[in-house]
Image 1 (cartoon, one colour):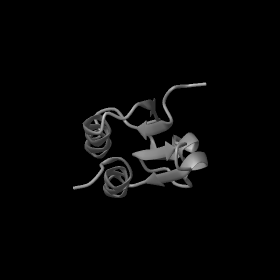
Image 2 (cartoon, helix red, strand yellow; image 1 turned 90 degrees about the vertical axis):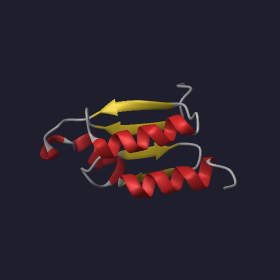
Image 3 (cartoon, helix red, strand yellow; image 1 turned 120 degrees about the vertical axis):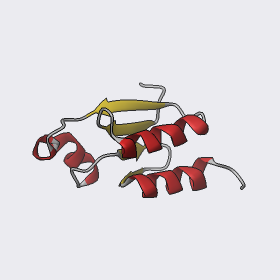
Image 4 (cartoon, helix red, strand yellow; image 1 turned 60 degrees about the vertical axis):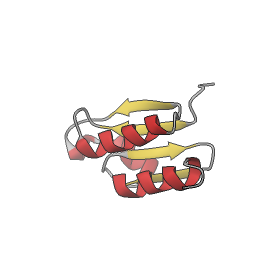
Length: 85
């Protein structure tokens, strides 16, 4: 069993993906990166997981949450792991 309970599906050099990476790092969350195919039509692994072919997408086994769209993911991570603001 892997130590990381969060899996991040991402593209190399994707600014939206990097935004999520920064948030994961900020909260010192352990996660596994899965780099996906650059061609949108080839991203079947992401579609199977999130229902969409867009990245970034995360699967959080701690909470059972799967989502895509960087703004939504960052907001989710802040609410779930950020503590009080």
